[in-house]
Amino acid sequence: MTETEKAVLVENMLLMRKEDFDEMLNNAAERGAERCLAHLGLENGSAAKDIRDLRDLLEAWRDARRTAWRTAIRVITTGVLAVLLVGTAIKLKIMGGWQ
Image 1 (cartoon, rainbow, N blue to C red):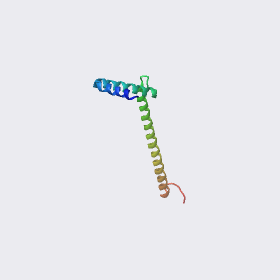
Image 2 (cartoon, rainbow, N blue to C red):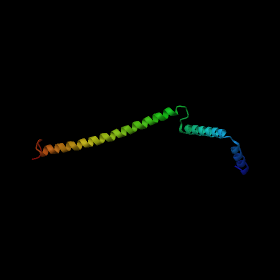
Image 3 (tube, rainbow, N blue to C red):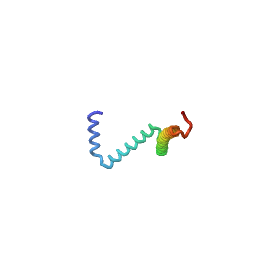
Image 4 (tube, helix red, strand yellow):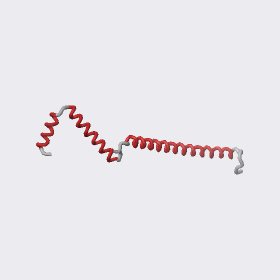
């Protein structure tokens, strides 16, 4: 961009009304958002539904992971308690064990 073009651009911006400038910015923002959605493959109008589905899927994944950890901890805790109970029963000779 040459110096003359820059000067003309600045002059035009100074002459522009605030409403016109806001409208130009809004149009540019909308075009940018549309290009971004198109780049992501979400331009077909169902982007909101697709994003909701992705959020639901992510939440389900987090719930499944949380449940798996809780289950693993419960299994380990139950195993440790069962071993302690069997050991105590053998020690107290409630169950037949080594003599």
